[in-house]
Length: 111
Length: 114
Image: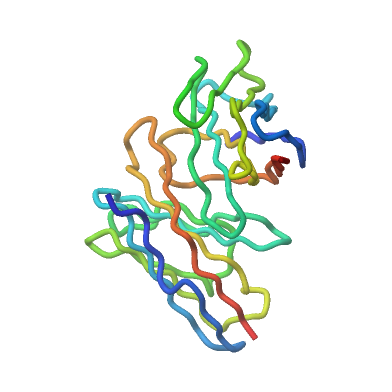
């Protein structure tokens, strides 16, 4: 799985959009970008994933650059409950439930 | 539908003992993976099982082992416990082999070795 680089921490005001960047310059053509988050002491939670097109679901939007070397996770209206560590993971979809976690980004949403 | 269930939630063991942790995946999921999370090393992959066979293995010593039953439930065993084995052990299940699927995690078992 390709290596990813994320900022160690970010802050966001409640109600504002949180934009979390991720660099994955060595991504291969068959690797997807996945985002998970982990709220303190809980199991990681799936957020969204994509290959090359932008994706949106009820939780977030994923913007992938045209060259696929970076992506941004967008939480449109951050709440205090969104405070968590966010992990960007690049993986081949047929690798089952094996995930390679990096350090992630600690997002703190402030009131 | 029910999520991934891990038991027990908390466990305290003494150095040298062994421990068995259990994971029940989401119904219909055939892939189960185990992870260890510590403050120093973060989330690390232990191993993955699919259809009762180990498919992938991380870089952990042989003291860490697992198995999967015909109903996809999985157990993880750690023998000769060391203080450094204190961690949150997480299990994840997924529909392996199906494109565009995500892994669902349980709440974990927090193991403390004293």
